[in-house]
Length: 359
Image 1: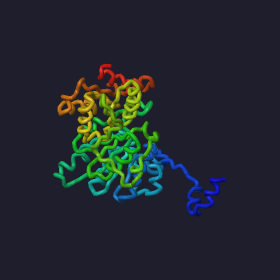
Image 2 (image 1 turned 180 degrees about the horizontal axis):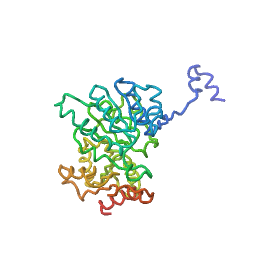
Image 3 (image 1 turned 45 degrees about the vertical axis):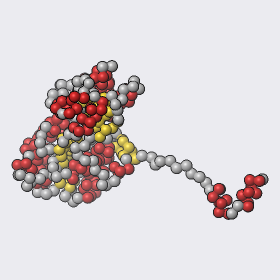
């Protein structure tokens, strides 16, 4: 009763404050976006922002893309900006390069980068070299994009990784996104870049959802080409990967952390120009290096990283030889069990890390 009488004596404002309901505020749920939708968002925003941007390729318009990456864009932008092409990579890649030289900003989709072999003369001799050959007078602002590397059950002619192929060529920029944030930020930067950019996506990642940070949901969000990202901090060993194997590396790091091994996982994001400075700084801290890629071992991305580390200041900090984890040095088999043994798995990464650390 004393408590009630106390309330009665207080001013009305104080009483109403005491009786107000209190709600516990929780952080809003993070937005989950698949890699497919992130690329779609990025292209949509750039098509809306710049009328010079257009998309062409096989089945990109009325069918919404072979992998539904261009879903809804044809209905929104029409036949002039979302263009279905014949099955002729040499032809439509040439049209796209010519359009870029004339001042447009084409996005040229290959249904898979294996088919870009049909158009490699256009990509290398026409797109990559023209700025240099014209003494800087003629830029070629074009994006070549599509799925790259091993998928599932599509055998030797549809499973190659072209990171090393295109990363070899001066005049090209080459990016390789892993998650949704990478995919959106890099496709937007690629479209805005005045150089030819090769965007190596991964078919098996298209349907995988990731949390998209608030800043990545902005129409102004860009990821700079040529800058890697440290996905996990660590002190014992540096693990460098690009595309889908980044996820495998993070899984391996989680397993090894339970055994007291802390891996620093670097997501390359860009193959060319390579962010060797981030890798060097990490190696100087951890004193060990493992590279992971889905492509073949000879002259690969891992081979280039190891060579650059050997030639640079980080070499003297290594306590053990660098180790590469790569795809098997064979054309991709069709049989499931052979395919699994031809692509780096989490267990292979763990084995390589333990070998490097001598544990």
